[in-house]
Length: 411
Image (cartoon, rainbow, N blue to C red; front, side):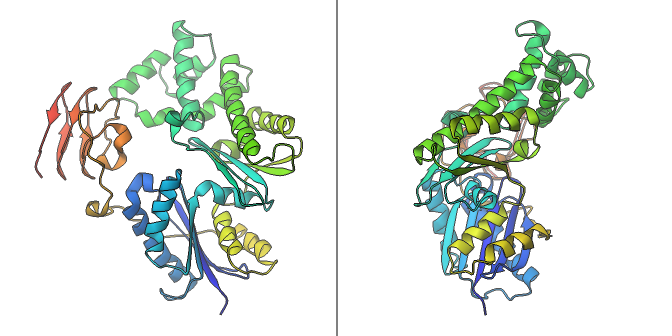
C-alpha cells in the first residue's frame, strides 16, 4: 500500500481536509467549519479536525485507524511561534499520523501558488498577512495581530475607511467624494449620516459595513480621488509587506515568486492588482507575480508530500486531481461542548465598549476586554464602560447601565 497523508487548510469560516497518497492521488476531500484556535480554542480545533478526519476517511472508503505517514495542518490563528508550538503539541498528541506538521495557513497558500523555492505571499482578504520562504529553509513572517502589530488593510479596513470618508465628505470635514452618495444609496437611505445613525441604533447590523469594500472599488473606477487614495494605500501596504519579507530573505534582487491571495486579490480589481504588479517589479525586477487560483488546501497537501519521499509526477497529479474535485460537505460541529473550550484568562477591571448587539461570549477574546465570560453567555445591548466579571455559564447580560458591575453571577 502506498504511503498516505492527511492535509488540512483551516480559515476563519471553513476547513478543507484531504486524504491522499504519495503518487498524487486524492482519495478523500471534505469541507467543514472553522478550525481556527482564535475562534474556537485549541480543544475546539482538535475536535473539528477529528470530525473532519473521520469524514475524510469515510469519503475515501478507508477505515479510521488506517496508518497515515504524515499530517500537515495549516491554520489561521497560528500567527506567533508560541501559537504554532501549542497547536503542534495538541495535534501531535492525537497521534493521527507518524509525522505531524503545523503552521500558519499562509504557508499552504504560498505552496499552492508556486513551486519556486524562493517565494513570498501576501494575503489580502478580510485582513492582511504575509509570509516568505527561502530555498535554504529560512522564513519571514509578521505577527499579523491587526492594528496592535501595525497591520492595515483588507476588506474590513477598506470598508470601514470607505464609510468614514463618505461621512466626512458629506458633512464637510473631509474632501467631497462620490462615496457619500454611493454609500447612502447602497443602504437605501437619504444620507450617510442616516446610515451612521441606523448603524448606531441597530437598525442596520454593523456586519453590513463590510459590504462597502466592493463599492469602494466601483467608486474608484469612476476616478473618485478619495476612493482611489484608499486603494493606493492598500497597494502600498501590500508592496511594503513584500519588500520587507523579500529583504529579510535576501530575495529582493534575486528571482522569486510573489503569490497574491485572499478575496480582495482574487477579485482582480485592475486599480489594485495592476498597481501591485507594477510596484513589485520596480522593487524586485526579477519577481514573478501571480494571483492564487487553486484551493489553498492544495498547498497543504503538497507540503505533506514534500515531507514524504514521493515521485516527481506526484505534484502535477495532485494539482490536477484537486482542480477537478469538489469537497464533500462534512457535518459541522454547531455546538462545541463549552466545557472543552479554552477558558478566557482571568482579567478584571476592563471595559466593554462598542460591542455589537447579539455578540456572544463565544465570539469574544481577552482583547475584547472581557473577564471570565463563559462560552454561550448572551451579550446584548451593552453600554460603553460596562465592567463584567465572573459571569457563570448561561448567565444573561442585557441592558447594562454605564459602569454596571456584575460579580459572581451564578448559573
